[in-house]
Structures are given as structure tokens and as C-alpha cells.
Amino acid sequence: MRGDLILYKSSGKWYERIIAYATKGIYIHVAIQLSDTQVIAAGSRGIALFPYSYNATIHMPISLVPKYTTQIATEQGIAWAVDQLGREYGWVDIITQAIKFMNPNIN
Image (cartoon, rainbow, N blue to C red; front, side):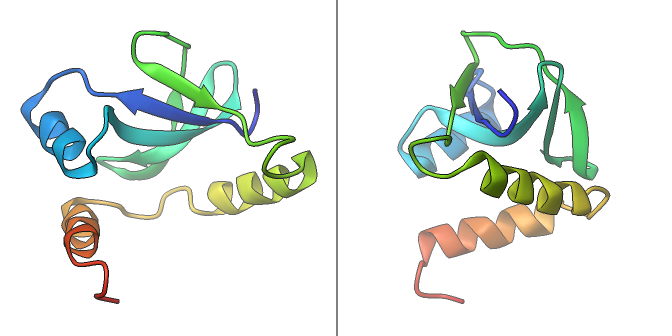
């Protein structure tokens, strides 16, 4: 459903196992569902649109509406995410997030 968070399970690749170990879970990535066939997420080339086809083996959709928010607020979040398209996101960002994860008191 539009606005759902799509959690991605590890496929077992070495770097995915490191993420799963660090987060103490099975999920290694997240995207925002825009439609039945498209998500927005950070990738190797930055924030971009990616094709999406639900696969129960690797995807866990999380619906935020109506339990946690409204559809109007979700659309505002989607608009913000779309404004981020093309923004760079790379290894420096990943390493920064890892440092913050390991040292949560660092700003």
C-alpha cells in the first residue's frame, strides 16, 4: 500500500550479515512504497526510485496508517522523500550511520 515501509531481509551476503549482526535483527534495508511496482530508497547511486514486486521471502511491509499516522501525514512524508530524489547517499553516509549506531551519544 502507498506509504508502507518495506523492510528487506538479509539474503546472506557478507555485508548484509554485518548489518543484521549490528542491528540484532534480520532486516538490512528499508524503502517507502510508492505503488505496487515502485519504492523510493537509498541505493548505491543515492536516493532513487526502484522497481518493486512483493516477495514474502525478502519483504516485510509495515503499514503505518491508521495505527501510527494518517494518510494525509503519510502523503506529506512521501512528498518529502520525493524531494530527496537524486541526493547522494554513499559509503561515507553508511559509515557515519554505523559510527552513530555504535556511539549513540555522538551528534
